[in-house]
Every structure is written in C-alpha cells, then in structure tokens.
Length: 78
Image (cartoon, rainbow, N blue to C red; front, side, top):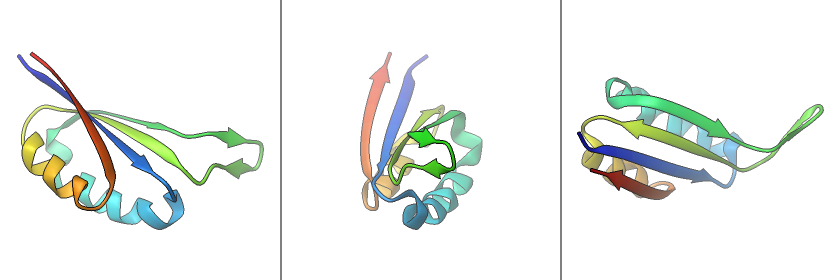
C-alpha cells in the first residue's frame, strides 16, 4: 500500500486558516492523519505554521487544489 504525506506551509495562519480548513473539510474522509506544527510562546502564537497530512485516496485531486492556494510539498512511499 502506498502512503502519501502532504506538507502545507502557511505564512499567515490567521488569514489562511479558514480557506485551508474549508478544503480539508471537503477531503476529510481521505485524511488519515493531520498534524499541525507552529511555534508558540506564552500568550502568543506564531504567524506561520506547517500542516502535515497523511492521505489515503484522492491525493492528486487534493494536491492540485491545495497547490493553487498554498505552499505544498509531497512525499510518497510505496
């Protein structure tokens, strides 16, 4: 079974989060694992962040849609 990991880099989480969440909700049944990484300090969140997704199907369709709006990189394991 092949595994695909999609990395999405957000430069401004507060402005981009709603649009990203809308896309991820649409593909929710294809997302096996979702991990959000960002720097935090007490009382303050970083503006940028990275979302890692492990997807199980429709990955090409999802990558195409995400790539048009966000900085996206992929890893595939067979």
